[in-house]
Structures are given as structure tokens and as C-alpha cells.
Length: 269
Image (tube, rainbow, N blue to C red):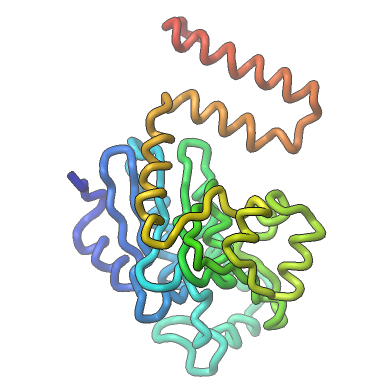
């Protein structure tokens, strides 16, 4: 049974800007639902995605990000670069003319849509088909895990437009593929097809298109099968491993395991 997490009016408002949220017990499904626009992203969509992250029930353990239509997301709606812009939104030309503080705050607000997917109490999965371009690529990178259909293609087109990837994508991309490959992908803006994404470690799994939804749900079920606190502790160990020395990581493992053993034994701190 799908459980509402906010008022129907709020859920409807999110859907109007291309985001649908459904919660089924410990699993939340976030769907980009503007297939007629190839799920092009707008500030309104980003505000909705940020709100979803804030309003998820505490019971949710796994978040599955998926998209309707032939493309995961074609990236930023190019209307934001035009003088006309989008109704009710400040276009990027006007944004560029704002003060340093206003510009920084605006970009930080955009980033909120991308920054919650890796929080410690969740594991997030992006199910990607078709094009994932620019902001779409970065939204997939925001998730912990990615499953791709065989027709998936990634491209980081910001540099080709005279910009930089600024929606939190540079850190996970570099962590996944290394500095040199990340630089080449970003600076050229080239397409990275699903097979290469799998070989590079961008995709955890590549499946036929008609198997994408099922594979994502199977992975979600496998993640939910493990005890929640053990998954949280393991995620924290792995997220911090790159910043710790070998000895620091050993010590962190010992501390985490002590917590787990005492928890299992019913012994408090």
C-alpha cells in the first residue's frame, strides 16, 4: 500500500513541476514525470526534489529514483538561458547580474535538490534509461548506486556551454572514475554509453531496457533485506574510507563493530 507523506495538494504541486513521490513502507520511489520534455530540469523541479528529501518519512531506508519516457533527463531546460526565461523564475542572465552573495545563495539552493541522496540513513538508486545529460547526469551521480538500461547515455555538457558542473556531480564522478577520466568526460562533453559506464564503474549494473524497472526493484529489495543499522554503519565506513589512513580505517571499523555487537546483545552505551 502506498502511503502519503504530505498533503495531496503538495504532492500534486510537485507532480505539476515533474516530480512524483510514492512511499511503500521502507521504499520511496521518486519519479521524474515530464516525459514530454524529456524530464528537462527547472528550478521548480529542483525545489520539489529538495522538499522530497526533507519530507521523507523516517521509516524510509531505500530511495529509488526513476524517470518516465525515453530519457532519464535531458538536463537543464534551455529556456533558463533565454531573456524570456521560464514563468516565475529568474533567468540565468538576470542571476548573473546579482550580487556575489545572491548568486552563491541561488546556486546553493539549486544544489539542495542533489545533496540529500547520499545522507547516512538512506541508500539511493538511480534507474537510468536514454539520455542523462548535464543536470541529469549529475542527478544520477547524486545517488549511491546506478542501474542503467542498455540505451543509457551520459554526457556532462556544462563545460561545452561555457559553464562548470555545479550540481554536486564533480566529487562523485572523480571518486568513481578518477581525475583524468573525469576531466576528459567533462571537458569534452562526449557521450558515455551504458557499456562504458559499466566498465568505468559509473553503473553498478547494465540491463536490457525492459528489465530496468525490475532490476532496480530487485536491488532495492536486497538492500532492504539487511538490518538497517548494519547498513548505515557500513555505508559510513565506506564513505569515509577515502579520507582515512589504513590505520584510521581499522580503528573506525573496530569502533563501528563494537557498536553493532553491543546493539545485537542488547547492551546500551
